Image (cartoon, rainbow, N blue to C red; front, top):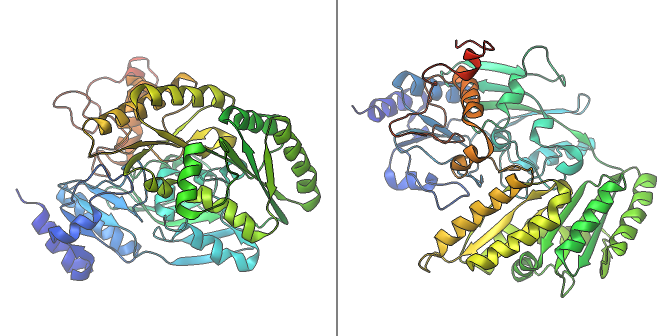
Length: 486
């Protein structure tokens, strides 16, 4: 039965024809997000202009039993916004209103399509900014940040998206509009907002987000330290943290990542460096001055062969330009690459980086490392040429082996990019079947029909013929008398 045709007609009647795209060529615009080697053309795309239109869209999908997927700017790197071939893609890029900036409350209220950096620009005249800063902050949207619980360079000190969202208006998968949290830092009852942030679109779609604003620091100082090896840079990172200093950011790039950044943006990093650290401190001037001296000494003690201190904002921006452009810059040295995302305890950095180098050599696939060293959040870039037979498959093997290394060292298969469709198959390596079933209970409480972003996060179908949705049979928690199925 054709459910898309009648659904498209209903949505055109309710929202207007310019909100609904059904032409297949136009739909190809949305066939992938930032993870381009997964591509699916949606059956329909809808571009609502406000929360009312978005709620109507979801309600119409629920009535028709049609799956839907939310998409902001489409910069996600785990396929979280990959469309469903028989479903509707709900694109929030037209919902870009900054509803309110309230410096007295240290809050801003924004629509999901607002670009991350625009929140800071709106808050700047009041002496505030929005702390979570993904490398894609010039183009990524707040709605996507909420879905993926995105991080960024400065999340070492300030925390991830979940630490900066205090409220959200959400359209649940059946089209109901609910309010989670508010302006206060905490609300009574179950932390449903906490469950929603980072749920990758499986619990509904945010139509309005209340975020915490942070007062702009009195002083910022930035250091670029060059080392001969990643071991030395990793040791310096651990020494800084162990000394009780919490920098705003500690970022590391290895030789291959530096080569790519130089080719793309000519950032002028020290020649011959096997690794560089960018260390940034912010806060009261006296505190920053004292800690900066500590950081400089610790880098020298760990064999940094060159230290550069940003003399002004222009030089600071140049330091960051190389780091922020690294992902895209890799395209200068490789036709294809996989951006992997995993996290490990910071102290395991030297061992894991060495092992990544060994795995890379064993498979004949180059890996560039650029990552948030301060919190052990790795972003290995696995380079390959899809035109070379077998190279893409070897790159996938290396990518999977890196995730295994993260788990082996007590880390996780994702630090900030989400699970999406890309890493769903790795979830059983980290969680037991009972763990995954318990997560499904939470998901099914919001979405019993499995319409909201199906096929993501959970490794379903896990068995032949099994479809996403409520677990069949008795749950282990029931058998233990710990829970009831509702």
